[in-house]
Image (cartoon, rainbow, N blue to C red; front, side):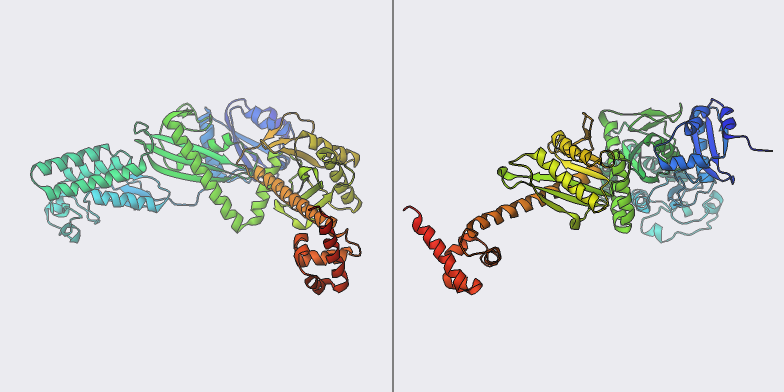
Length: 603
């Protein structure tokens, strides 16, 4: 039977919630997605040209559309998550996690053992976690060991085995780490009370354990058992110290999960904090590589479903930076103030630090990928038709209205290309006129590139506001380059970016990498221009002083400057010192010239 056409498949899609799957001509899965309305969502892929090239490529490959209808949006979200992990489509983000995280197990047995494990066995035992590092697990187990003397043997301590005297006390009993339940020295009831207290600590609730220890300490002190009371006091201090390092918000905030996201052009970083009794009992950040142009909302929804499943989270409320759709069973809170906003900010900060750490590692390990990411980000931020692999920035310098010059610096792949830097001495403009100077240098620069068949830049940055930008545009118009090169102006005061014909400036995030590259370009152009301006002023001052000496040419002048460094010093040295450098004849002319000038000065 012949496959129905895409048009027919689209027309017959239902209007309700569900999950759709795209397949290519060979029957390979390309993409899985969820939708509130299957017909509208799937049709949107085919009725427009997408901004992202990858999305357009995906659409061209789609031959078959399959769908699964589900009762609610929540079911769609869960099913999408499961299908992505099971089918691993090429164009979906990768939610698969190969790590096996550690858990803390309270074994279902008489006199329960408590230990760490990477395997969950469905035998009725309780598992707390998973934790994202063994360091955290070991810290908690050390805390438990200091507070409660539990057994660590693997004997079957059934009532019949204990009564029959099957087991003997070991070293752990004699050094005080265990109270000897194997020989009946500790009752099951008393042991399980300790396990209950540990269960509360693992849930982040320290209140009951502190209360019980403080009562025991007072009882021991009243009975004159001061050494035992001191030991309990030390346990209280250990527990309070651990609690103070965990608690960062109001203890009334309990059983809440916090999720935040930080993203760039190529990846997103989702941080998750689990809060119980005001304490962070778990933190984890995951990196999601973008496949298509997924929004932060879409990525965060998928990540929340995945993390709740991975870490077996059962909380009824989540805190997020913006509204997400997680179904009716979960309360979604977007805090603006107070303790909940504080904990959200902490989560965002964790995501940002994780991103910076990953990018630093990437820059060292794979510099090409780092460059590609920045170029893609700049293209998006600056709304460019292509990546700005070749950028040129112009800056004018005319300090106190003298010696007007202009500088052009060139960045390739986001880095300075100093061999391509150029200086311009202003030729056609009289006096300090920044607008006319900018028009001249931009025209000269690109007229020459065109004549020499040199590659043109992808982006031109003009250091200045609307006036300088308009002047540069006149030159591009004259060379018929308008529309072939993107040109923008950057105003110094507020870092405003101006586009031709757009009255409203663009403001970039002050911490964005795009703005940092632009600022580096602007600062480099300013430095390069000022250096040239100073050199020109110094040379002109020396020229005016030395060139007026009869019989002294340019070559002699340069030799004198290189040797004596300044005109002032030249005037102070002896005739012999000068003759050693340029010969007796010329030395005599210079000495006589300065002597005559000194005699002419009024006394």
